[in-house]
Image (tube, rainbow, N blue to C red):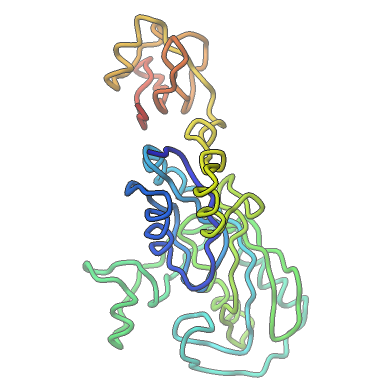
Amino acid sequence: MIHGVLNVYKEKGYTSHDVVAKLRGIVGQKKIGHTGTLDPEAEGVLPVALGKGTRLVELLTEKEKTYEAVMRLGVSTDTQDMTGVILKESEVSVTEEEIKNAASSFIGDQLQIPPMYSALKVNGKKLYELAREGKEVERKARPVHFYQIEILEIHLPLVKMRVSCSKGTYIRTLCHDMGEKLGCGGAMEALLRTKSGDFTLEQSMTLQETEEAVKAGTIEEKIISIEEVLSSYPAVYAKEEGDRLLANGNPLHEGLVKGDVREGWVRMYTSSGVFTGIYQWKKKRQQYFPVKMFV
């Protein structure tokens, strides 16, 4: 079984679940999970975890995302992108300065109301299922954060921008909200995810390239190991007498650990250098406690 993360380039027309299903067939294993949904018409970076790497999914989903989006001004749709039904069309007479000011106004902490056409659930039912039935329900605004919104090109009615944001952010909702702020409406025309955490577009592979790597026997070279994914956390080694506790996923007192890293999350290794998992130092208890085990 393969363990680690594969940086997949999700192409248009596939859901994130489609990618996982196809990869299961390509690599021949069931234990696979994606880290952050991309809409079918969106494309770009989709880190996919394999084997023990699936324990990283929650951690990787939390990471900052970067997108290049094309917004069409002068139109509003029921899906907030151009795949939906047009609800309203307006004349576009905005200046470059007004567009840039509108973009800047969204930078920082925001409360974003998720679109009806989304996979979020209300009372156990996905919002897009309710939307297809012609129902609209109240959605709670969710806290999101925009680190950067940079206008790259303006060819009205199209505006291309680069957006860096927190997890759970809907870029099509940003396009809609910016359009409303400009007084002419807006909808997302295209979306490309260029970065998810440390995974970049340049390093990503299509499903076809992945299949070719499997056939050539080079797929292991393309897998990012669990240790590499977690390399930003300092490495800490247990003393020999702490190895037994590590094997059972137990906390370790500071006296059972070499070195002096006494804060945050660490990569915990046995005395012989075998990686076991992520531990967190808790000052009050003077112990390292397990966060995620990979043994």
